[in-house]
Image (cartoon, rainbow, N blue to C red; front, side, top):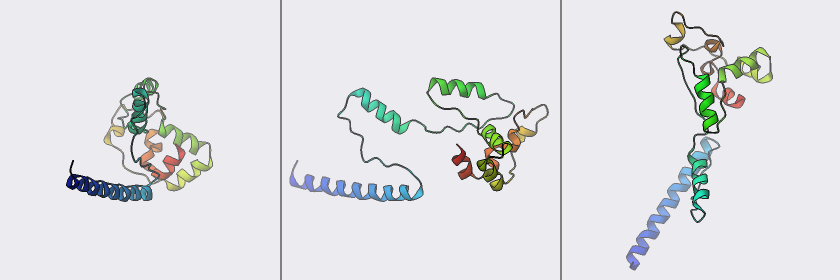
Length: 148
């Protein structure tokens, strides 16, 4: 490396750091997003893989489904296999509203009925858990996330 290359690398490093700071500021103002400067790889392979998995594994998986399809069992099996937590959001919402909890009241105040897919209106489709009425789409997303 000569002096020109070193100066050029220094400029590129400074530009990257400035861009990283700008992105971190933007992300922090939007939500509680964590920004990682770097991932240290001077550890064992297992530690690095664990760190990478923690950074990139999905924290929340939202499953939308047709009411004619059974999703509870496959989702529960996936949760067991990949060490996740499976929650039925509409059942949590229904339970809080029916039990008149503070969160249930808050959810009711934020409720705005929205049109659901035609799948809910097909002949022979049963809505055993009142999903049509208690679907998260009807409630303020911030209230739903607070519930979860």
